[in-house]
Amino acid sequence: MKHKSLLFFIILLLPLLAACRATNDTEMDNEIVPEPTVAINAEAKCPDAPVGTTLFTNLEDGFCLLLPDGYAVDDSLTSSSGGTETAVYVDSPLDATHPRLFITVENANGRSLDEITTAKAAEIEASTGSSPTWTFGIMLGDSAANQFEQVPGQDLSRQVVAVRNGRFYTLTFTPDDASADAYADMQTLYDTVLGSFNFLWHA
Image (cartoon, rainbow, N blue to C red; front, side, top):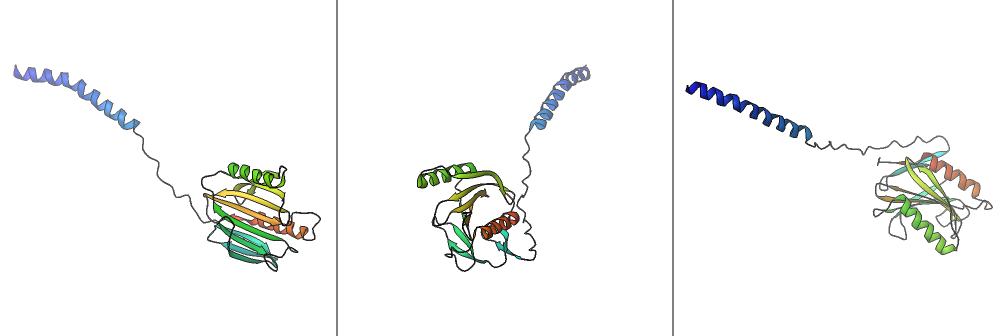
């Protein structure tokens, strides 16, 4: 009789155990497993320098590019806002008779490209009293960039802005004035730089 009672108890217990197991399996299936962290930073390949060009690499600011032969580079400068600055020139950074390029790199402080572009447009408009001419959707390396044309200053300049890895890049080419003697050479410098610019680390 005792054996029959024990057997009856076990039969009653089996459905309960099965229900508990099903519940645990469901909870395990619904458990969120974090995705593995993937290292997405990888060194980019700088372009080979064909005849008539020179490769320049700036490891600190994270970029490389080609320059037409004949240009000197000073990458030890500091911008007026405290960022780093690289000057590309022929005789000196102050020589306005030849094309020049200034590359500044600053902390973006969490701002997006759109936010920086809007702020820069407002700054130019405040200083000139008119809306700047700009071009959206160009590329700097593999990053989206925007461009301002004929920005007033000591010389009219063409400025390309981009945001990469939390840093704000500005490339300023002078003179952006079709009547200037150095304009054609500036266009060659611009085409060479934008056609070869690479960020050293992927976003």
